[in-house]
Image (cartoon, rainbow, N blue to C red):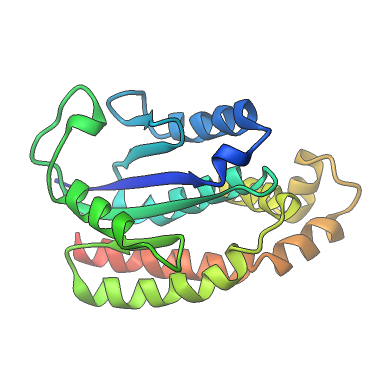
Length: 204
């Protein structure tokens, strides 16, 4: 069965004065996809692995994690997404194995200039989506903590309109949310996510 594995680490974690806050928020988002340690684990203080069983949602999961971490000033996260099978399941995700883990690890180790990339069994998807991610990263890498908070809410509650998000985030006006999401590239990011979902579903 095809699944997806995210391998990541927190950038600049050792210089953070908000360690408890970012660890708590990271574990909350990881826990929304399953229970530790079988579905996710943190290790070495600032690294993690997560299984997202629906591979078409793996990129959305990565961007949720991005938004959660970038809420905290001067922090970011590197994530390699791998799609494939799991041939051995252990009680801990870090002890499981298979092409999904290999693809995720290879992808993570290849990250140099970018902080996010994906490796699937399908080269056409790898080529297309990694170009899109590289372009999107020009905006994503510059999300401020405020923009990240708004993006996180938009990704977590896609059914809510901007007025409802403003109420959720205790903002005074819808226009504040609208402008923040626009400058964060949310419309274009949603288009990329829709393309990715359809592309992966067409292969499954």
